[in-house]
Amino acid sequence: MSRPPRRKDNHKISRELFVLTYGALVAQLCKDYEKDEDVNTWLDKMGYSIGIRLIDDFLAHSAVKKCRSYSETADMIAQVAFKMYLGVTPSVSCSSAAGNEFSLILDKNPLVDFVEELPAERASLCYCNLLCGVIRGALEMVHLTAEVTFLQDRLKGDAVTEIGIRFLRKAEDRKYRRNK
Image 1 (tube, helix red, strand yellow):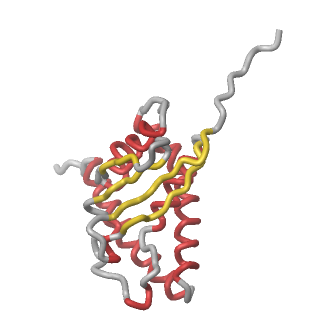
Image 2 (cartoon, rainbow, N blue to C red; image 1 turned 180 degrees about the vertical axis):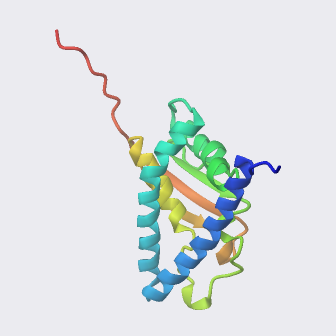
């Protein structure tokens, strides 16, 4: 009698299926829209929608505690969320003296496993812009407003893939008091 596949195997299959499906999605968006900016906008919107839903799953399955700083939040995104959903752990670097700007540096981006290069006519396409939307949407659901953009991309000839996160403001911590 054979055993059912382990949960880890299911995640790997799901990840590979996601990467292949994602490639087909980007290809279809490129057929539907002439301008790369339109494709980038749609990928960001889709990612945002995913992010606002994915945060619930992340919080339920990761058992993380509340982050006390932007650097803790950036580390949590890199060390827990990316590892949990994409199987990679980007390095984190702070890129501002104020401590509100961070870079996630991916040596390996699993979304481009089956992509060799972007076509010349799609030079301004941000192929993985979905990731920016996911991060932005998830952060917004935990009351952190952020601007998330690609700073470097291997598909565009850069040495690494780098995602920039700039926290715009922290939502006020509200402490409620009981009325007496």
